[in-house]
Length: 162
Image (cartoon, rainbow, N blue to C red; front, side, top):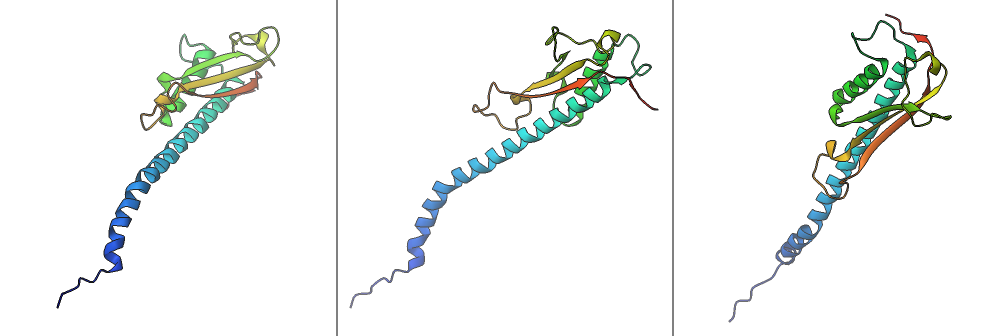
């Protein structure tokens, strides 16, 4: 009499499950990390937008007496935007901030926040940061890309209260 080995279904499936895992795991990890990376990009973009909004609010106000010695209002706005970004985890030193005329013959040229000639004039604040400065993972897909936020405001005379 010969002894027959009885094969069970579980032993056949064990190898199949291993192969399925080997095929699916890299795809799953790639999707999970990609989702995480895009979440990081969206968060950084929201922080850029918030910093521009706060900078625009400051630039629209009368902040006489709030400046450091030998500091221009434009420098104060740029300094505050970079400080806001640094506080949110975006390297403020790697950002580019510009304040320009938003319309008219001077569109695109530097806007002087302190000039009385610019009262009630529209200006645009733009902030850009290289994507590599906020990325959590080294990837080639987004290399060379920049995140950008901009806001157009009107220079007014709202007083800052202490």
